[in-house]
Image (cartoon, rainbow over all chains, first blue to last red; front, side, top):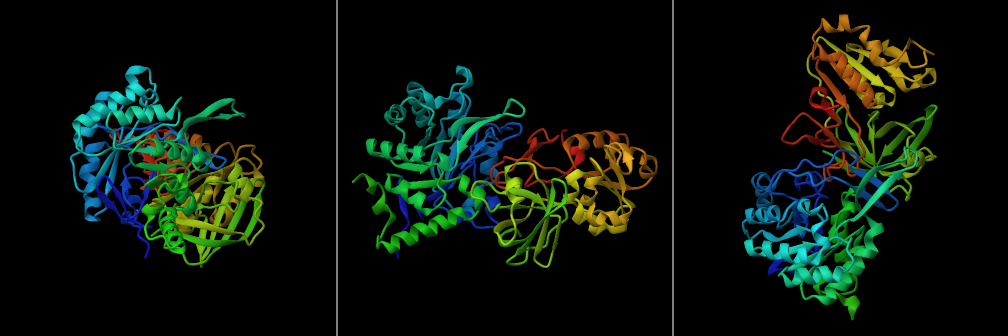
Length: 300
Length: 253
């Protein structure tokens, strides 16, 4: 029997397959089809200090082999999540990664401070693609100095390991990752969606601007995982257009210790359990005892 | 409980210009559905990326019927299915209509909106008074078996029944309707729902309305398909999860 379990920040996850933040609701929504305990860990919907209403519609738009979303970070707020949903994960003994964001530095810090260490909390995942309202709306993740500062500030208020989820819309991803690393970040999730838009030629207007996800993004994310995992000595979680176990394996071989599956779940709600099963079958077929043995093998 | 069920297209024919009826034989039976619920269908075309939401038009003995209008890439591709294609159907989804005991029921359907009301019409039978509006006479087949229940019909071009829209037609009957303990069930374009809301406002007649929105997952996972409601704390409700049927008075139009 091949082992799918992985170690992340000193804790054991039963497998390396997670959901991408915001693609599995608050977790309970998938329960009629399969249980959250199937996951290596559940990544929360992006949480903020105060509840956030999100954007008007249209919020989703299909592209060729991709999906543009502009949900606008709708969420019930960090406190309500821990009151109403965390007990459910505790009862199911399912570890979680808490994705969080803010529109100001103070909001990031205050939000991270609210989250108390717990044996089921593997890490905080910091969404750095958010617009900084105090700096003209440019996203925090685009400027290495900004990234360095905010990572340092958040690290100062929490004992929980901190993952930075980086935006691909940067001049030099390595420079951004380096800045976060020097500020003490414990790992990375690569990559967030790519900023994009649609033009409606009938109405001669722009119906949606938002983040592009899905298979169209996969080779871009894969390259980011390969490069960052080989240049910095911290774990990298790979995400971007993973549709099946072969895609997941390519990220693992490129250096990801775990993967996140998002858009695929919308097309096949059983994508995650199928990917887990597919990885296991692959390992057994090639007589590989542990999934950890193939992390980064494409580098050798 | 919802499930993802494999199925095979057995029929896909035009019922009126631009409108079609699709019949799918499911490989196993769907859990009991409530009128107003919907399905997410994987269109048998690799160029169509996401599933598409469709109201359940009818369901019996493992045969699922969906009535649809060809409006975009997904339905365009679906309209070309000739039969025997394999599809997967996530069903039944969302919150349907709730039937409470009333003296009278009124159904207001605009165009393809009748697809989402058909199962309810069959359930209520003669207890419901049906108002149906469409563009012209050629679209009358959308009524299906509702045509046997003496519906009031309007066409925008006046080629059949009342000339005008369905809310104008309903307005002519409001005096008799208002006197009873009545509930309205509706589905149709948002402009129609807006004017219907205005018409019902004076007496604030109870009304359940079925909404549509661009959807990605259909399961409440992505928060992509929302409607704005009067709830100040959490205004945006998911059409696929808290809906598609909402109390009309709760929705901001």
